[in-house]
Length: 449
Image (cartoon, rainbow, N blue to C red):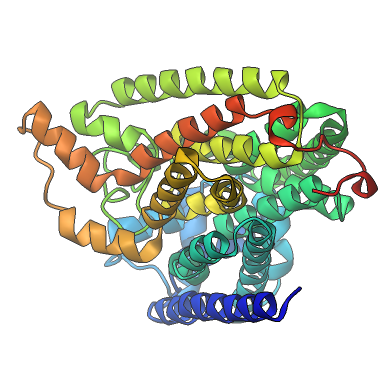
């Protein structure tokens, strides 16, 4: 490494440290500004405490009594806060992860959880930056800086999405670089167990991408299922009716007036951590769950079938794998309920964009523009500004042309994610190891690229 390269690397690390510091300190300030912090970790912490006390966290009244003991939720609290606090909709596997923390006082537990979440996320970001740096140091720095400077909500609330994304991205790095495989299997299994709708398609890629990666995916899947079984048995023992209660809570929180409703006037859409699934766009034209769900599922199913077909037919290779993974990450956000912090999974687009940028041409500029737009329009600060500027634009009586403009202005994230999904899938179709000089998956000693 030349002296210029060393200087560039040190400068990049310093800038990334500044970006991370913005999110960390701003996030801490947001967390300290509320009695229970930004609802995220306190919700899963108290839900797990409820289960450890032999009570049913999926029962609104029993969970409310746990909150009453903390003095954090009262009748004057907003609808959004009450729903996020007392309508528990996390899978039972979350209890296993949070149980060690729930044995500690809330302040101590939240500190340790925050350290774990921030540490795993920063490691994931640095791994993506380091991978992309070998192709384009400038692209790697630009995209990673924007991501790290916009994690305030994730770090403040301690939502499991931050940990799930971090672990999933770490697992991808381990598998594609053929290093620390056991750690990668554990990371992917945990992320899959906690939020399968985040990590599911990433896991599916490795299941389909050749025998070497399939073995790793199967191991992660078995471990994830084992965790799910243990957690389900525990929850069923303490709360025999948890499945029905879980469904009821999910229906309430996702139905009309719920904080996870994707409708055009929903609380969840008009917030800085806005919902970003495709339903939020379609609902502007047809505010009917049967319509926007059917259209979203149809579009997503067609893309998924095409994606599976291509992945199964293409020879597996490390560098081209990034394109399929970015396409899968973007598609995951569109199918069902996701918020902007789930889209941090677009960290996977950093190496993919750098690969195309170093090759030049139209694909390079398209990749840079789309990847940058995808990261910016799912970033905390830009979304907070966007929400305040556009929150009153929607009108149910507006014409189709006006609604199209409203959809573009107020819901750019799902539209950009859809284009990213299709673009990187097209790139994956056009590239093979033979035409791009890539190596197939092989033991580490055999891979030089």
